[in-house]
Image 1 (tube, one colour):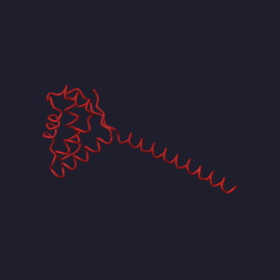
Image 2 (cartoon, rainbow, N blue to C red):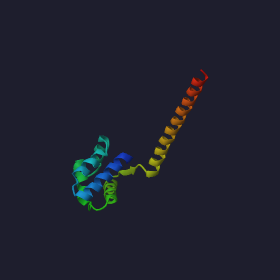
Image 3 (cartoon, one colour):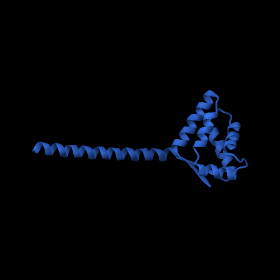
Image 4 (cartoon, rainbow, N blue to C red):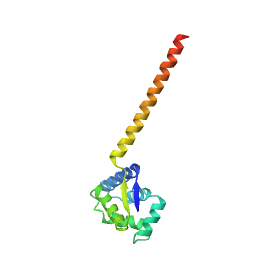
Length: 128
């Protein structure tokens, strides 16, 4: 089974993990990790892992985490889930950059269309 975490979820976990490193409090991090997964994903994880409750599963991961590096946390999550036969996939930075570029290109195209419309309207007004 594969679980995909989108850019927003990964960014939120990274931000919360950095806050946990700075402040030493993992409660918000725990909540943000849990929110990154859908209810269906949580049910499947609970079915596959030894611990019955997803909160306990996340607690085990956070207890094992040294609290020093964000990447280590992601490695632990991946490791624990892979033991249960679950692969975690992340939105890649390249894919996100491409999506952002596409959105920017579309916005530029719309702006150009609007400018073209403005020119047409101005020409029409001048002829009157």
